[in-house]
Length: 481
Image (cartoon, rainbow, N blue to C red; front, top):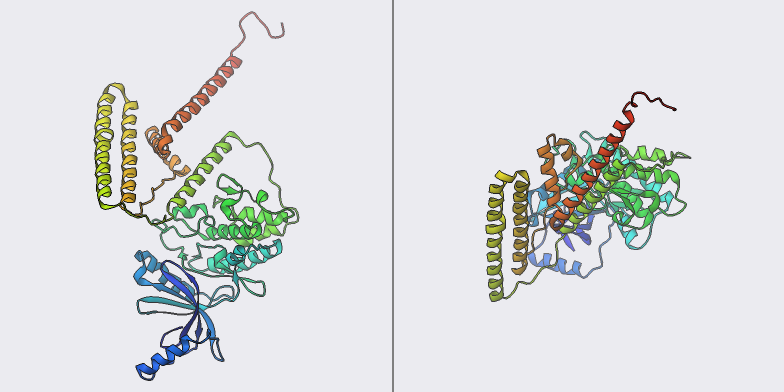
């Protein structure tokens, strides 16, 4: 056992551990005991405590939770800023369904945040044990979370949790729920540009992938948490249509229609169409006969939109998977490593000399005679050289035993296309979109061109039929004869 703050806190057992810190259960004695006696006496007391059973609080003492953030292991200053922001945020809160702040301090290069320990079991522990929640418990979860999130979002400025998930929701012994872990909080007054992407994949709202978190992002996270506890599955394992989770096909049989409607309102991918608060979604829960959506055959525009959303979802999952660190690799022996890296250097030089420089130069010169198609081919050749160079760089890192940086994916949105006000800008977006398909770019472009050609021919046939129908009858002939 370890004492902190001159003996005021005694760490009892570790509750969790991350890459930069730990969470401990501790005993708070309310005041520092001081360090008395000689160094030999202090060592004897330490040895005696080490052989004892875990301490229990006595009269005048209480159990607290202490988060320890090791400043020396912070990968960036942003991590230190998030830890300090969590302490400041928790100090400003006072709500029964949120942990109460005690104090925070720095000792021996570690930042400690002391807070009330909410007794109970996290929903993640319940899931790990194979347990789920029934519709009644899910309603209680939504009601308690609506109370807590309503309090956070009503602050000035609004406080956004940004990481609502089963691991951050505690179920008390009386059946009530509380929200913990404010390590990802954000004030809405902070500028949105350059905001850090914080959250857990599967429980993050789509807008959080672009760093644009809002109170509606917490509504989405709570909806995903409730659906996960109701079904026993992770959100990404459930049926989807584009970016939207199909709640009706995911929930168990005999789930109340009002609960289905509430979860659908909370899990709407578009934040403009999503329920603005949990309380608004709960109003659908109380409706005896929630409105049924009219089942109609989706239009061609909607089908194309769903295909685009499905493609964005695949790219988002691929991006999240690529950011997970892989197992460490053993470097090759010295001589094979030198030979391999020399070969990779020769390959990189050849790729850039021919594919990245010579071929684009020839195509650019010929484009003076044959026009834009050759200039587009030159741009594609340069892009291919960049991709090949990146692949060679990743291979070189693996040969040396280093972890290769994950490839970055740029996901084009409908807003980017709306901003393309000229034909040249629209063509540039189409080329970028094709390049994001990597080795399948040419096949994708051919399919795109064929689709656009068929659409243009169909429109031409429609216009021809309209012209024939509108043409007046020849002179001397009358209708009906």
